[in-house]
Length: 193
Image (cartoon, rainbow, N blue to C red):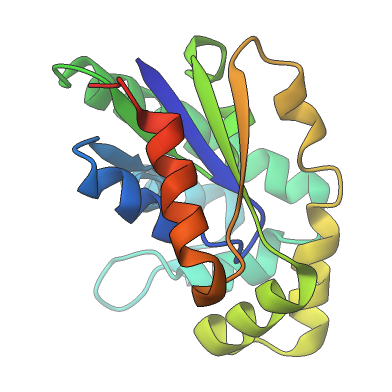
């Protein structure tokens, strides 16, 4: 069974991924895979977005690239056209290497080549203020940048409702609801392996 895992910025999907792994399900973090895809396509990125993105060690300056493309739909689309095919290929190879059920953890799950193959989709949710404080603590971004990221995901859930997969919403409000959260994950994963 192929399971998708997604959620808005700082909803806590990586924590849910760790709970799924503890239940024996292999999890692919597509965001980390995206870094591999960025590195593999860096020469094309340098050509299209500027040679100054190359650090002295030859790697890609992802922070500078982010500043250059985010909030600029045309530039972001151009970058995605370079990176997404490479990330999709790596995702497909990873899935083929798995022996049983597995989980694809991706912020932009609906853009993955495997989206239509998913049998279950877990959407992780958390209240706005909890996500805000998580973002502030983890990423140490200014309020304006956090608000911009939140705004960019305002229509987040609608694209998942169009799939044929079973949809599960999992609230991740923090430690106060941990027992309930774990029971929810147990219910979703019951009989999977």
